[in-house]
View 1 (tube, rainbow, N blue to C red):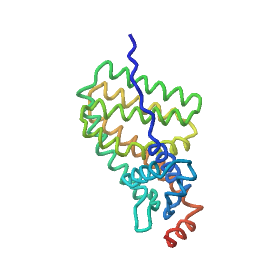
View 2: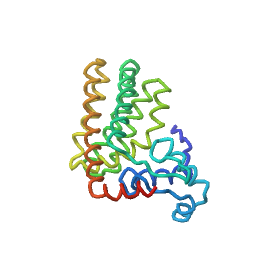
View 3: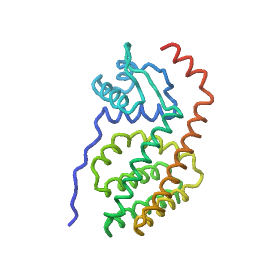
View 4: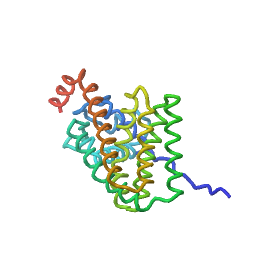
Length: 234
């Protein structure tokens, strides 16, 4: 018998936060941009409540900040990227080490199913589906660690990493090497030796950090002067 679990549609505030987050990561909204509640409510045809919810979420993720005249875009600097990936590496290394001790046959099957989704998405060059499966794979690693505090930290920053992930996979001409890297991580978890697993994970995250840093530099290059202008105006 198949168990059907209810799903919760994202609240309007969450949906709006996702839209604004992607724009901030892609620099469609530049650092220093003043986010006016009434203007955003009119633009997205929502009340001010969801707008306030979205802005509070983005503030908790360090992407906007509240000032005397309202909310302003902070954006993602190179230092932010380094800080985020340093945090991720520190908690994900612990997660995979615990996963080695707790992995089951059912868990391995679940992980391999996600990797198969990634390979299929790479076959058809579907960056969106690939990014979604990639995020679910890493969420799976935290979940099987059995440490709910690690899961809490990951979930707090998962939306930011999802936007980053979408941007970086779009930079990859061939997604198959990344899919294979995830398969290798799963194989190392199954082998049960944490040392090569930790080394592989760190190399994987270093590669992701480098691709994101390159994407941020490329996005920032043409609008650096405009960003400085907006920051002076704010």
